[in-house]
Image (cartoon, rainbow, N blue to C red; front, side, top):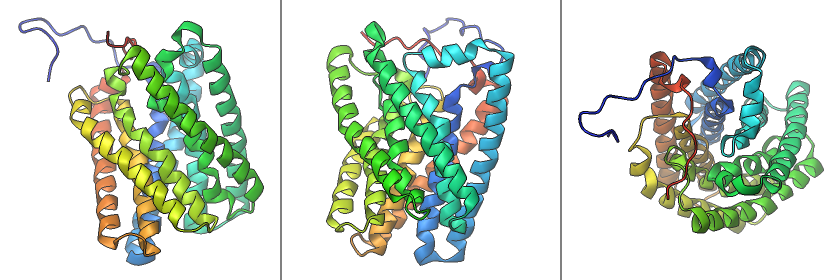
Length: 336
């Protein structure tokens, strides 16, 4: 669908450039890691085939992470002001957490697929410390933001929260129970705070920018990941199941917004569908293995998440080849 008036010329297009590949480009790494973890959980019932899919997704995520780290370093050297612009942007600044969350997820995939090791332990500790610093920076920046404060309140603000509640997934097998519990608690406390801020933002300013509409799927991630963490702590099955129900409610809410997400050109924010759905699939499979959910339902969620990640990967390849994903981002002007 086009928003241009009939007979009007299309807007001029800027040359495609890696200058415009911001930190949001790390979100696909999160989606691929989530897919790997979901299939690793499916291996409990499906065996080596599921393990092979999990390994392939993890290798692809690791390769993409290395490529993005190299591109980001070169981008900051080649265009130094991009560092300032990324940090100062009222909406996109929260994606400074995407690289650290991606590193935590890569360490988690490594532990899940190959077991604990000194290498995964070092990566996990470095990423966990960086995530704590990023969370503090995002919170303090929001408190000092002034007039633009509410413009930055979108579901993407949950990404620093998701990073903290991820830590037990690899931290417990690696022997960092206390560290994992502390940062998990920080994420668990910030989660309802961000939800409350989102409600206030909708009341004050209305919906977030159209290009960020798909970020509503991020609402699924915190309860799904928290449920996975609680299952590792061997709490009563009722609590992970309650969090699964909360995540399911957000799935229904997000799916109702899906037609509006596709009523615009494909962009990086569409990857917001990936990690939340894969995390929900992983929790569904774990609860199914414990007998709390029907196995066919969990497999259906896994199939849906896999199709979504595959489709996003294909559309991203097309977007990079055409240069559409290497264009300047429009200014985040909210609807009146």
